[in-house]
Image (cartoon, rainbow, N blue to C red; front, side, top):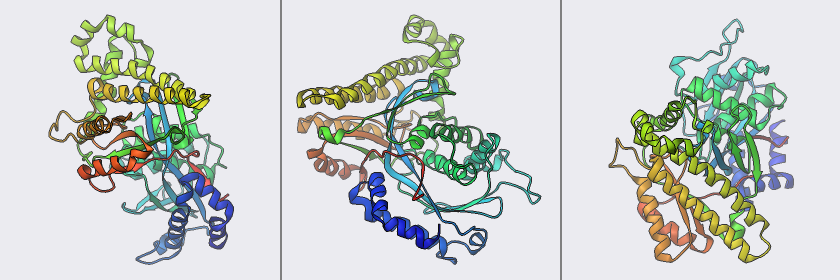
Length: 456
């Protein structure tokens, strides 16, 4: 659509309803300003606007795409071994104003990051969709990898220009990278594939690109949650066809806020720590002739604990125990949320939320003690996550509150997740931000929509 048409849709009452659904009613005006600034910068060439060379390739039709970050509710490091998780998309997102291009190149500008340009075909028009070693670990590899996988599945992968901005905190465990992956997937699919791909397929395409082009052995939870929207329970037992089930998740109705604390630790040099978790879990599975722990059960692991320790090491055994315990907790957490949703009175609702919070704390303790991903053993001096967990639990005890805290996402650095009564949120934020700095506490809101094209 034209600039005038798009601005009219953003300013319309229907536009306000959509933005309120994505970000909350109190954030509608801020969202409108963010979208309008992206449009203005994209249509203005020069040093403070979009590059003229890229504008000349645009087809003139403006389109808007958004993909949310995600929060992991349960199932810490279970997805890569075909386990179970609870996750939800959140109000923080990556938004892009997009125009299809006349050539086969992608130009992607995102505030705060270097510009990305990828040529998807050579000068003769022959597709150039093979992995490139020089792009590994870079955004360029994700663009090429997603285009390649869509092309393999029969979707054309033409070019586009995008002006984007993200409110998903980088390095925070809220999956800023997965949000961008499913954003790219949804853009390609809507521009060149008639928007026919399901959320799960878009997620799988993003994972393939991250595994084979970017070079990171991630699971599928992050992409699935970002692509799907809302709160979901996912069972990865059948990795090609995971079971994704929507669940109701409204803690505000029970008087609680969900937030993350950014400990602002560095993720530099942590790849070996992340990679060791799936590797050691799979090493434990390999002892029994299996590929992943999802093909086994806890009883089998415990019965052979003595031999498994010798073959794979103590930490592999502990991480395997965490896997099976966490899988059971995911089911119990989903049941507690269902009980909270179906509660007939305040007493039943309180018992359900209490059960849920106890399970969250158990998950956090298991990650700390068995999974061991709250700090890098190679950098024992940097234990921001451990400090944030200890300070949060101390706050709960001192204020005589029922709360919960756990490591969030991959771990080793980044964020913890906290559940706190709404009337204690201000005091908790002040207490924690005195240690980790202003803005380190972010309250999350569950967003009902995943990666989508807006204003269509």
